Image (cartoon, rainbow, N blue to C red; front, side):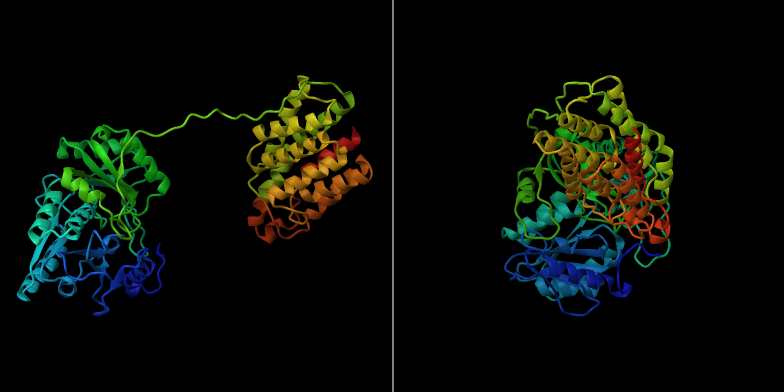
Length: 546
């Protein structure tokens, strides 16, 4: 099955262009209404008083190229079908539509289809009396012996430089020359863990083996120069940096960190950190990205593009623009940190003895430890199978404190808060936090002078508020709330009966309103008692016996 969202494969590019134009944040884009097969996105504010800068190519590289149309960058972008060059007619119509007396510059990636179609369109445009120049971007260093290096992500930097010159009123020769200067000082190299998939294709790309990355693959999924057996972020950055430094040589650079489409923002941030600590770091003046600028559909990879700077190129990169896709350069500087004292919450508790309370604590602890396997088995049917272990872990810790005589047994408020403090530390997942909230809030209520039963209900109320569950949601609350209400109105024996009745009722609840069980279908819940509710019932049963 296809890995892409789309309605009509034949209209995919047209639909995507419409969505991009509609959502352009500056409201400055239009699609030229010429022919459905001619897809040209242009500046809405263009008046032909300056040199026009036009680029384009196959779609699937978004935001390139239409995402760079706007003040300070491209005048127009000609969009082909996925990974296919736009037609000669499409390019010609774009040139004629936006070019005035000052002429236009075509910025073309070094692929045969793009060179031929843009080149022929330029010749035809000249026959109309228009002044047209063309620069070819060939920034890929993956195959150093290739006489025709590909144009990849560095193309966006050429768009920026040429657009700057045109926006500031330079003549056509000057715009062409500064764009060529950018091309001559531009070096790019990329890699990917997975190549791209095509919308509508039922075959998933599996060329690259798990645990490997392909170095120097093309932005249309063309095989790369070599395979490397690592996915380690530092090693991968070092692998890219070495040939880039060798090719680029000395100087200060702006480095574009380009997401090829399928890398998470988290990973791109990590790769940026590795770059900032690499051997190239002393030469990096600006970072551009990390972001998708010239992507390759859903390719799980990224590329680095180095532009050697001079005063003019630096000014061009930093000049403001109004586009969808450009990323403002950021000067590379050391990580900024602010010293702050660590806050560690702990309950100040003075150990004290109370044999009766000690017996109750011991009974609860032993009950939870004894039920570990049973609760895990129940949870395996409706959750992730660890409820018993989670409660037992908390119980063992409290049991150790009891054995070591470190609990404030003769001070109910402090004891409850002490238990809450420990459970937040030793119990995993949400259960530990919820039980900590329960005991902490109950302990505070006791210290505020409320009776113990009312304090426990206060703790329950806080647990419900933060946890979001209530009676009937098939959680431990279905046993705990009736037990605490019975304890307030009666004794431990009444609380035990209420807890057991509440736990048994969960087996008849066909839906869960909270917790992992809420993701389980009703057939799997039917007849299975909630493990948290069972834990509560067993604790109250043990307390009633002691």
